[in-house]
Image (cartoon, rainbow, N blue to C red; front, side, top):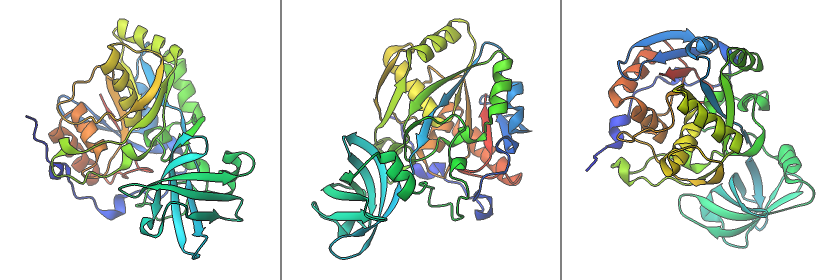
Length: 344
């Protein structure tokens, strides 16, 4: 019986190392290169990632695009301020979202946003702050959200984001995420072009980041944590390319934990890559046997988080936590706008 304690994945991080703003140049971040078996560490700049990729390898990116999904509204009956974070579109104009304060809401409550061109009717109150709402608006929802919503930055970021696009990857194209797949924030168009010129194939999947990725673990025993599901898509072109890469014994490099979760979900079910879409609630923690991914580009994750457990499963808890301590010692920037790791 696996016994993994949440507290075992805790570490102390000086607050000054929590990156509050993105760097001026995306690919100038630091890059900690980690050998997942030996624990050997090399310090690089992110633009040097190209030196660790070889002809015939595949770099897999998540092309999800972040919705301006954070809305501040007014409860119609009382004028109370309500915050709504859109998480997932369940059906036409019906969304699962996080609301606070949730205790002030009841089914039938109407919340108005901005100039009241957007309203939300509460349909159902669930646990953990989750609420189901029906959005009422005229026109195109994305245009309404662009006007009234803001980027759903994590709570540890206190600085105002001057440019919305800096919380999007340069290759983002499919709207649907409540948070950015932040490992991809380091890439520029120029770096991606240079990677392609080296004969490395760049393919995309889509996983819309939702509650499953950033919900904290509130249980002592990790195996008792329930992940919320997130929607993913893999195209026929991506599946065919990745199957060929595997056949040729070349490497699959996942950009970010969301990409890992999509690739492993499909490979664990089908033992090969296949074109499909669906919901995944896969929870990867130590003991997991990887079938799809050979290398991982990722940021530095919060203590006691599912993401820290995923990268620990890819190497080992001891090697990963040692790398984190080395990063702290070398003043790496942590979390969403922070520096990166390449685990090979």
